[in-house]
Image (cartoon, rainbow, N blue to C red; front, side, top):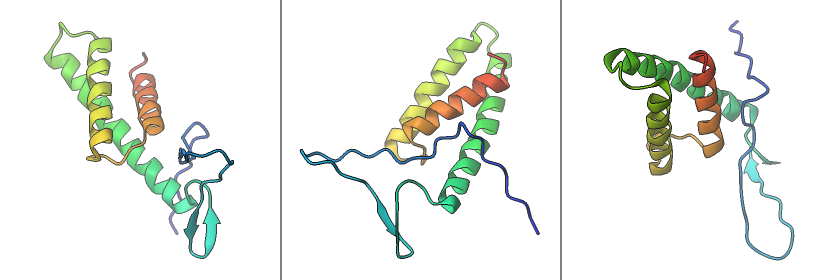
Length: 114
């Protein structure tokens, strides 16, 4: 039996949705015959696993860039990375929400002791 990774409390859990109109609305999806607001547990685990994998890869990338370009500050590298991450998210190339992007950048900063 495999154990599932523990999802940190600070990992984003909701789907941000906006619906125009005067009357209040609740954004839900029909999943397996049930209305669900936000991610299902399975979807959340997949999203967390993918984001954590990105954190590890991008932390290594930023560290490598710092060695290759000693004149670049860590802050400069992180700004470049943040811009690239936002571009990949906006284009749909990477399936990460804006909130997840913020979480990813925060974890990278933590990993790099910034």
